[in-house]
Length: 181
Length: 186
Image (tube, rainbow over all chains, first blue to last red):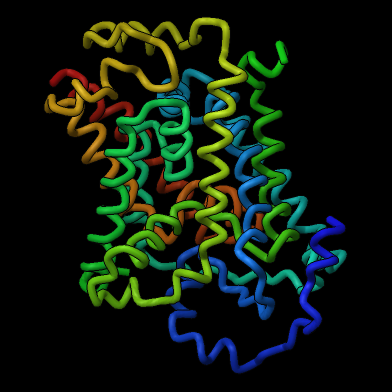
């Protein structure tokens, strides 16, 4: 923590009202669960390693609680096990409590920036795309995160699934304008 | 060590996954969402003049670091915290799988279905290649996956995320119960 403070740039975060307008892809991005919070801080690349640390714990839990297990996913959809419902339910309760506290106590990021939330807009894609993803989830036993974790457990063949998922995303981007939203 | 090696209970994993939400927010104002990485990879490697991929993906590199961590965590779990016991699965699932010749129940994915040999069979090709494609296409169409909608979105009490999560589940129920038995029989 102390090193982060030490290397913090002297320029404080500037409120930039024009930043949003400049950002042509803002609408697409906010639709897309991508981070739309434009940090005004510029950091060296290794600052990103803190996200690797969070991912590490996350990946460890993914594998050790068998969330990336094809069997657990089948059992969830066949109503043969409570396990996955427990995992997702607990995660949502903890997440919601955290978000509530962050909003209520106006907790700032470690760089002193205000933590922002953006309401999502409903579109038909959430239903149609959601159904399509659900089919793939039950086939592979993985969502995008577990794909990376499955590869990490030594199932190298899952890279094929991952590449196919990237191809699926690309094809969606290609036909996006023609699809109902 | 011993305790960590056995499969973790659902609540332990739920707490860690739930805490990822505030961790990313507090560490850098980042919203938890993994499927976006697939889009960033498209934008980085093959934007091909598609408007959807024309954006500054470099602003999102933190997410590559995050999934890099997931990969690393999975490797650590496998190398140092390998589960010493045989994989437990529901007897009904085991029976249904055995009926389709899937008898090798170990690891996290059944090797009879997910292996290089299987990839070149119709069954394996459909599960891995078509399944992967549906994940990539569907998550982006829905604007997020289990992390972005079901965890992050629901944590922020977003109704669209609830609709998306229900759709994920409906799709999964349809596949696992109505379609998958036919794929496994191929």
